Length: 479
Image (cartoon, rainbow, N blue to C red; front, side, top):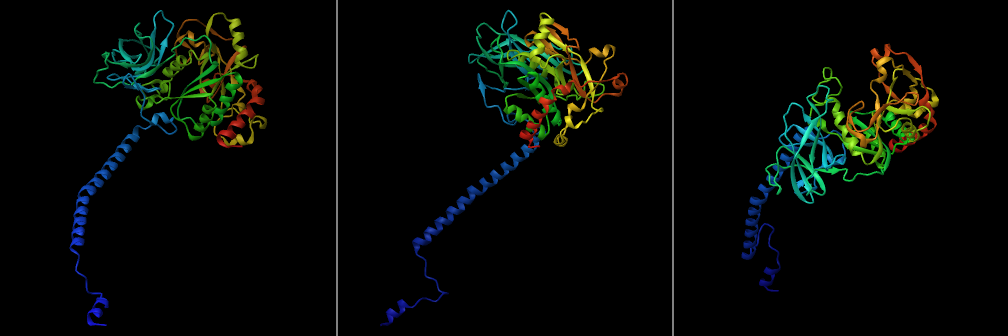
């Protein structure tokens, strides 16, 4: 083996390096330059993205101040995605009127006039000398017409009140599907510097046959945690013949929401999100001198009026009441039997008023038969434990009553009774039916009343107890 061969076969020492190939060197230089270029582009881009994410998070934190309370329906957490005539659409309350301190609640075709009108239930600042127009979406095109309004006389001295905003539908507008209330006219081509949110116009058809015989309007639910009474009320409504309960809800706890979801899934409850407290300082009471705020009791009156119009052509009768109130017949079992009896006794009547009877929560009869053990683990009032009512003396007999109405005869409703109507109103004899009202009673009322044993509510116990127990098990897993 020659010297040249030995030189080729011997491996070079580890500390020696082969000279680089010129092509390889140029390739590494190009890669280095490419990496340097990439750093100049991508690193600033990454920094920008991080800064933008931090900005969005900070904005979200700010917006959280105005987020709806927990357990609001999902629609309130999402932006409106529908459009009508080029404008966004929101299906439920509350919609602010641009340039005015006014808020749309619900819009409906008014069929009870010689000409077609759109009637919008609204909440307005009473001291504002506002002028309104209706922006109608008709057959895919815009129509702007002047509107008139009337503020309800029942505002209890609060700055904001309920208003009826109405506009006549032009004959060229054969089907007004959506409406916005505006502070000035809008051109037919929709050109405007303002962005309006439209609301669907309900009650398009005047029906004579209705999906429901009885509906109940509950206004309003806020900070609600009375689980047991809620379930008992729902099941009592069913026993009495109710097919639908509309609840204007601001807030409740998680267990109440589970119960509401249970009844919504059954198609028995309609939840209407009631977020007026995000816009106006609302009162938690009825007396402005005692309860601060700019709007009476969470906007109870506009909610009631909206409910009447919402169910005007969905239900033959609508009951306007609270969850701690039950209108019970004395001689028959349910409303299905009671209302024909009332119609026979009182002719051409559009509203029936029922005497309020207080059952103090401070007086209890916790008989085992009417208080199953596992109900004791459920927060709330057991209405079957309260069988003592207070007597109604003198004028108290006609206070705080509630009504069952033919909604097509109602023009304006209030907390107790009606303000404007087209048919007669009658006070129902308490021997025929009366209202059972479970609540904490003030000393003033308590001391002026005598106590009467009244167990009529327990006549429903055999049906009510198993029904309530089943709901508690299925909705909450309590047994």
